Image 1 (cartoon, rainbow, N blue to C red):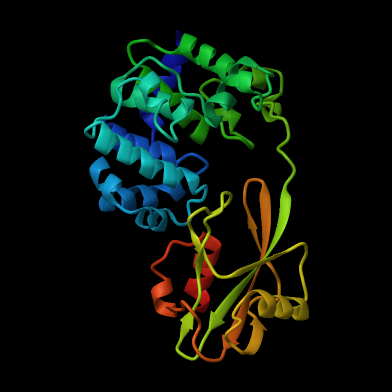
Image 2 (cartoon, rainbow, N blue to C red):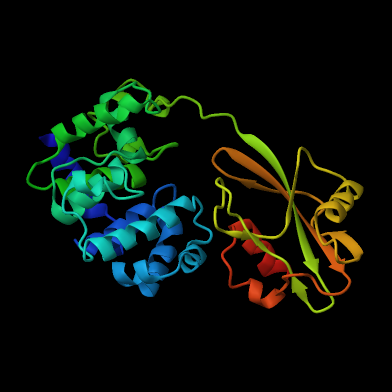
Length: 345
């Protein structure tokens, strides 16, 4: 078919030189696919290189402790990806002898591997004829064929996968999948694509109908929730501070943080001082309390905006279960707290 011939010719001339494209080994391919969910290639590449250096094989990753994995992942966000990655490495290493399943259906049974990732590994590692459908593929196909299906609907993936399978050359599914994703990433980009130089500008339905900026159709996201975090950065007479692990389900599970006071809105100095005295450090007299940042740091997550303030509490005596401030830097933190530590402590 002309579509796949044109697309693959473009890919061979324009593809980026990426390390996971130089192998059919499922381990680095799986790593890259998990890392690049919700993450741009330029941002994800240093993490991929760090992981493959620290954990050259799936056995190395499986034998690491979770805190090592989370520390290396720090800054990539969506930390459940890292926890699932670690658990799947243990399954593959300890239950499957280090051998990844060699087909789409069995790959789907592994923790953290959904339809897209299973299709990517199955096609790139084993050349299985199964289409990948990610945001790039939705965008390319919806524009080229003028498809107005809302891609936020669950049924959309099935529709686009069927179309991609029809277009795919059955003798080289891996190259087709790589090509269509790369085309969406480099040429058919979300905003203001340069259609004048596009290889499909004489056949793209959206371009002919002046609908490029209207496709793909995607219904609005759920409402963003605002949360107000006040972190208490305590120091005692011995240069110790206090951190805690977030064990509850939700954001940043199993990462570390300073003692936290969550409020309904931005609170004033006196309210925070009272709450510190009430909730923390009952054995210590608070000598002083200062704001590190007068303006809240706004940290945006997919469905939450966190308004974060750090408070410096100087305490008399020794903090119970305190930890040396320098030793704190070895723990895995959410990136917003890590950045604060690097800058202020």
